[in-house]
Length: 183
Image 1 (cartoon, helix red, strand yellow):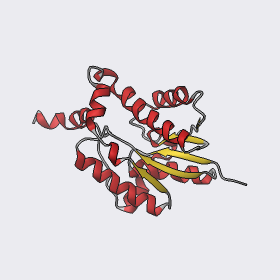
Image 2: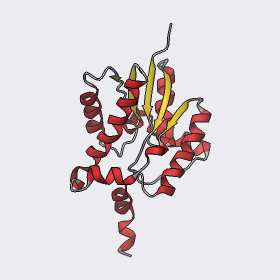
Image 3: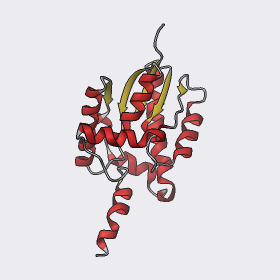
């Protein structure tokens, strides 16, 4: 029996661990996609990429790295004047690209590691994936990967990979560190 092919949008190495485990258990042939123009600064992008490279080797999956499309200016164009709803537009940009690649590659399904983080807007991501996938020729595979939050954290520590402390965009970086400005 032929395995179903799934394109997994990956935001970072630590968030990929549990979804990869689940998708392998489900019998999927997995190809990862690292497309994240929201990550700021470039050094942060590269640290996350390196962590993902370690995870992809550990779990024996191939990953498409869209470094040629890493351009935070495109991210800012999507979210500028939409700061109050910036996460939606950020998700939209990345999921739309994932669906486009999945369709061209004739994948059966797509999903995203954004569904792993307990800090992301889970319902927004899930609804957006369902809405964007309609009539696109590729199905959205939903799984609430948050159930494996602790498993992913422990495994990322065991692998000794970089574990970020904010979602990646300049806005979340600012929010994370703004309290340090007060001291």
